[in-house]
Image (spheres, rainbow, N blue to C red):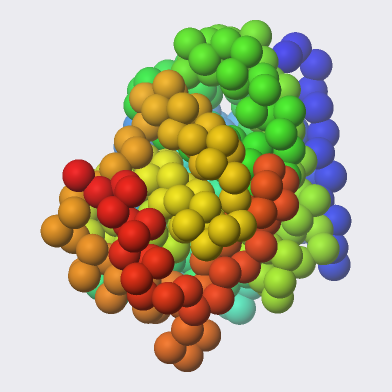
Length: 358
Ligand SMILES: NC(=O)c1ccc[n+]([C@@H]2O[C@H](COP(=O)([O-])OP(=O)(O)OC[C@H]3O[C@@H](n4cnc5c(N)ncnc54)[C@H](O)[C@@H]3O)[C@@H](O)[C@H]2O)c1
Ligand SMILES: O=C(O)C(=O)C[C@@H](O)[C@H](O)[C@H](O)COP(=O)(O)O
Ligand SMILES: [Zn+2]
């Protein structure tokens, strides 16, 4: 994809997601002339990019870079407190702005820092992973983990803009790229079957950013997310479909002390959700099998430890979709036909887990 594509996100505070190459020059226009100060939050792996952004912005703004720990290590209350301290020492006011540069973990933290500092300052997200581009940086869900589970503290705080510079994907390790494909596959199953066809048309190419369909896959996945969050920012209903595979996936991440990639965990979670839907009589066998075939061919995991079930079940009880004692899962009634399965029989749950356990 050479030209820049724009996906519009609607709602009370609409914004654009730009997808293309060499987009960093768009940042000053997004920030506008209101901020006097800009904080660029990034992990070590993106230090050079953050420095280049700082150098560019220095002409018009007082700019500070804030390096945060890598991956899930950034999504803690301690790191958030550190960011608040830097903003405080730097004199950040309500018109000043934050820029998140990195994968989903960094943009979740940067977004939450922006949501909470002075009860809300503008944030521009610059995702540098596939997962960040197609999912985390879009939609305004921000947050951190706690000892009890994934993303348990957070806020809905939409960015003022998102810059997906595809050149960033060139330095991304292969396993991280493939982990991002799990969310792309999710978008295919819940809303846009053309995504599944494009991936299946060249499975090897789909594992790399150099594939012939990379740009279209990213655009389609961003469009799925944009369509959903434009009408349901705060997850009052429709937005729950974006959580397909995440009820079990988040429990696996916690069980692995966040050493598994998010995309890998939700890959197992989606196979589980497909089996749950099948065993509940809602999903046909062929579509359930298509989950395994597709995710397996991409190199994503399809199974998890059998002995972990009691702990996973316990963790799933504080999933955000749960209501009182009732667990709720997103299942499919067919491709692009997501639905809620409420309070499934414990035996049904165990049977679905048996299908993904080893
Ligand atoms: N807010 C949301 O709506 C939303 C949606 C999906 C996922 N998430 C969250 O996103 C996180 C996962 O995001 P992720 O998969 O991007 O992982 P990540 O942020 O942990 O990044 C993966 C790794 O890639 C490195 N990296 C990032 N960009 C790079 C680049 N261009 N070149 C080289 N290395 C690079 C990072 O330093 C890290 O080590 C999870 O915490 C998940 O909960 C949030
Ligand atoms: O944007 C959403 O809504 C999603 O559910 C997208 C998910 O891919 C993402 O991992 C999200 O962070 C999960 O949200 P949570 O509310 O279950 O923590
Ligand atoms: Zn996710």
